[in-house]
Amino acid sequence: MARQTTTYDLLVSCPGDVVDKGYLSAVENSVAQFNSTFGKFNNVNLQVVHWSKDSYPESGGRAQALLDSQIVDGSDAAVALLFTRFGTPTDKYGSGTEEEIERMLHSHKQVFMYFINEPIKMSEVDSMQYQRVQDFKTRYSTLEKGMYGEVESPEELQGELLNHLSLHFLTRIVKSDQTDDVQPVIEIIDSNNSNKFKLESLVQGTDVFLQQRNDKIIKRIKELNESVIKGRVLNEDTNNRYVPNEMLRVAAMKIPEYDQRSRVKFDDDDVSLLKSFAERNSVELNNDFFSLGDLTQSIRPIFLGLSNDLNGTAEEKARYNAVLEICDEIKKVQQFQEYFGKLGQFHSLSLAVTNTGRAFDEDLDITLRVPRGSLVRPADLPVPGKFIISEFKGYDAVEYLFGLAATASIERYNSGYVNDATLPNLSLSFPMLQRSQEEVYQHNREEYQSNVNSLFDYEYFSESNSELVRFHVDYLKQHRSMWFPTVLIFSNRLEEINYSITSKHLPDKVSGSFKIEADGQA
Image (cartoon, rainbow, N blue to C red; front, top):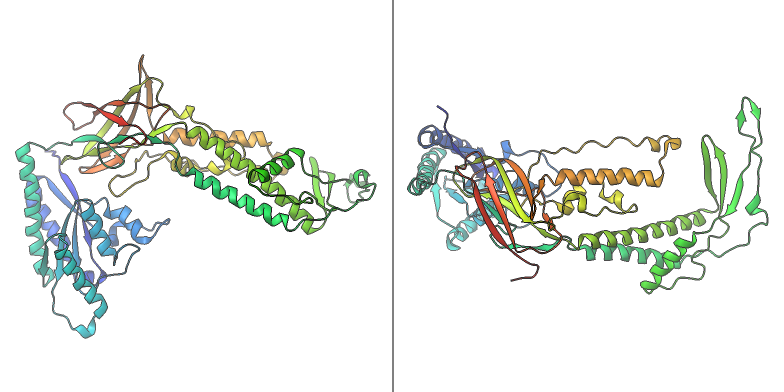
């Protein structure tokens, strides 16, 4: 007969010397015995979690932080064991084992703490490591972190742990039976794992980002100010020079071709842009700042097009490109200001769905009802300008802007979305296929909007006086929380949100509402 079983992940945290002595195997044997007896008859199953078999290679952070994300934060309880070694220090704690213990305790999760008292020869152990174990043992009891046990062999640990597991989970089962609480309990919480819902500005910290880019431009302008190129008089025919080209052959016949050269100068709009930027930032430009010496440009026919080549010294070419790059950076800063300014008009709300019950739940549908006209949908969001949109390419960029990153207590929403691989840009290999700037921008714009639509994994519905936003969660484990797909974005302040939740294991629809605090409101 089918039945519902509650599974708990049991983390085993210990240095390598504990594993070498067979204590990890003792834990696994104790858990197997628990599952086949006590757990079987009470619909409880424990799953041993240890880095050696449950972690995987991952990049993007320090090793212990990645382990915390992979196996520690998702565990429901822990068995911690210390013998003669304390372990390697992490950024925050004396060892990885200590960090894992502290994270579990901080999350108000059960830690079965054991110290091993096997006979040892001090000449065969690292005395400093051993002393750190003893110091931690003292701190654990004196700082009221909890009670600990002491064992002298793997066999003793196996028996003691089985007894302690049974007592601990018996308390949970009895409490559940007394309250008739054998079902999932689904609620909506805010980013602080509480019920204080607060609207915030959609974009934060952009002032620092913009100032850093602004400062880099100022620094580059000052560098060019100190290395100007004095203007020189060009030959009279420089702007109207035609040079025969003997290398071009068509049907084995020499044909005349021209090489037209003209003096290079900056576009008036770019000059005005850079001068205005310098004036706003109190930077005085050298009189020869825009001088390029004797730099000229050649325009020559090539296959299916024209070639533009610069003729001059390396210094002249470098200065020309440097000034153009500065102008491009100024345009980017201006478009970042415009884009962030538009986003800054909106308010955001970070929400999560949590299961505080004893049983997992499946097929959850969460629906929010808000006043009509207050909700900002993906199509209503601004799109970055053509100078900056390339910096928003890829799914990670929009996720950084609007997504919700996993924390120690709230896991990331899993939509199952896989970003499509980007097709190669053929125009890089075949110049004749190069697209115009407008075509490139349109392509990047479509990719950006596609990624935004994929991230906002909601369904939207409109009624006469309200709007509904709904999303689906396949599975939510007991005592676990999951973020909404993204922050919810609003065009104006609102005071209250109504919600409803249905799922496979909830006997009735859960309905309710919560009040919203405005920015800065106590």
